[in-house]
Length: 365
Image (cartoon, rainbow, N blue to C red; front, side, top):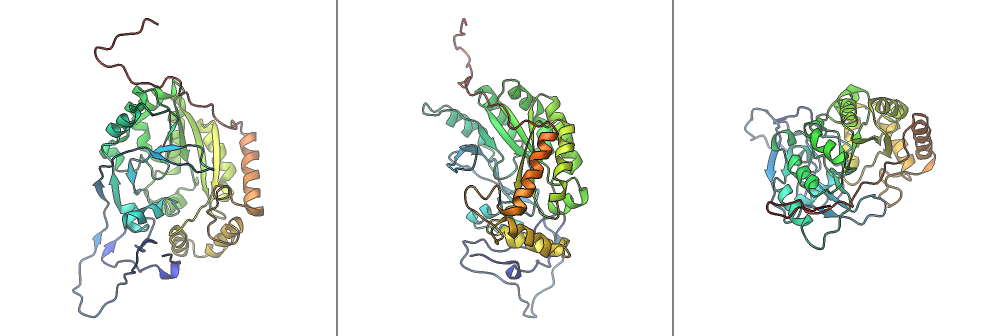
């Protein structure tokens, strides 16, 4: 089932929302029923309470997810968390919460599932005789360095396994907790086995706070780029998503700031609004930028064939039409002028193998 923003349920008056991207809990598209709040005059008044984040654990049987998408550069990934407390209202991963019977709205950013056994599962999968190495992408669905990671610390175990097995990895993040693991990323990068992408949506701190309420401020993300690059890690700045009217004017400024901070490669993706994300984003516009809402969505639809979203392979990450082409040309011209590389060097898979164990015979060569 799919809802436009006019069908979103109203905010629960008993809940106080602080730094949340969504405002309500629309049912996922697989739900057979909709629930609506309606007072019959007999309700007992309740004291409003602050909506807090809940974290539960999951014990999956495997940790590496495979994909065969023709427009994604990796074929395997690891996501230590389901849901993301950063609360980015435009997040394309929100619809994945519907598979859990949860709302892609507030549930996505307040009901997080963690996989604390990820490192053990990863080592078991790497040890299989049939396994063949290729870079593992971390954080492709939800951010592995979201706020809860500072407490649960799942990522260091994953990185140690990858380091010990000489297995290359890439990362997409906007979470400053990545700097806690800087030594591990630097150690892998020294062997050409690590690359990190840092997402910078806008340099406007106020806009970032509204769009991405619990993600680090733009200045912090530039510091992440600086610290990672100084440690020898190849850093890609991800100008994503590019939102017409709101962040699209900043393409050149973001690239310049990230280049000065040390980023060496760059990529750009226009705004995507799959499934339940479209009505949630439209609702956000009505609440935060009502005077721009129609203009923003008209420009979005101009890049998406007249629709809020175009899911077709080969189009979803690029868009189409004059609007998309102009933005891409501006990005490419600025990237060339600022001296970015067209792409990073391939990561090294040649040294992959099990780490030495106690009692193993040492090689003479």
